[in-house]
Image (tube, rainbow, N blue to C red; front, side, top):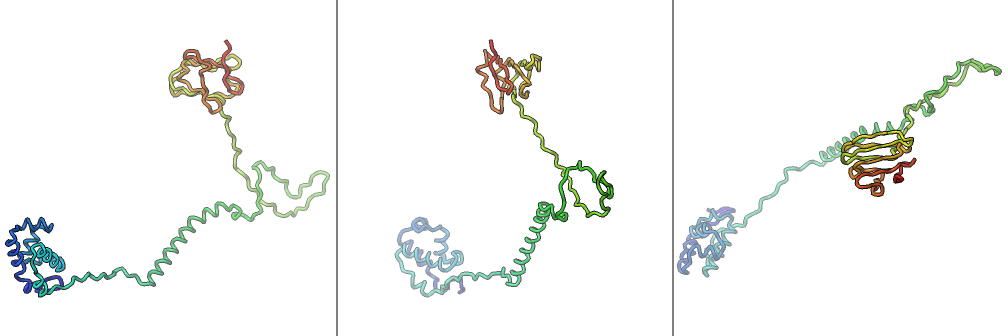
Length: 273
């Protein structure tokens, strides 16, 4: 049987028996040949049994037969010369995704139109919001809400001639509703409690501001001039901050008790003995 991917078995008939006889005369087993040629045992059995359909394309069968013959030092070219061995033709690649040029142009234009519409939908409200003058005629005046109402037309001020009842229309006022920004003054002194500590806080006039056992996580803040003297019973558990910076309590500590006075700007001063 002859085909584009098959060998003429009629002319190759006897090639397998020829190789088997040559192997046996050389005293080699199939395992010996497979080890030397690096071929699987089933491939050698198919070559000797002339089962060409199990070995794939003719070009592979020819190469395997020649390798086997070179190992056994025999000539099988007469068998191969008579065999009808055609070259394997590669499969033709046919494109099935061709798109006509007119369709490509239409799809490209459609994508661009969608992009323009989306851009306009997003950009137009933003552009309108940043152009408040488009909402009026450009002659508006900004004024406070407490503008005094004007006098009725024709009302004359004493000592002046009465004004004409016809006057040009006044430009409308646009009131500004933005309240003034007020910022709370920053605290001059902050006490952050990392652990439990007994505290005594006295005002500059000697009155008691606070005297209590504060827990970990508590915090106290005081403005400048609000505190005159502070005693911390567990100074190691309290972080004192002045103007955003942590104050080193070492100069004010004895054992684990810190005593210090607070100046008018919130800075710390040791207590005079």
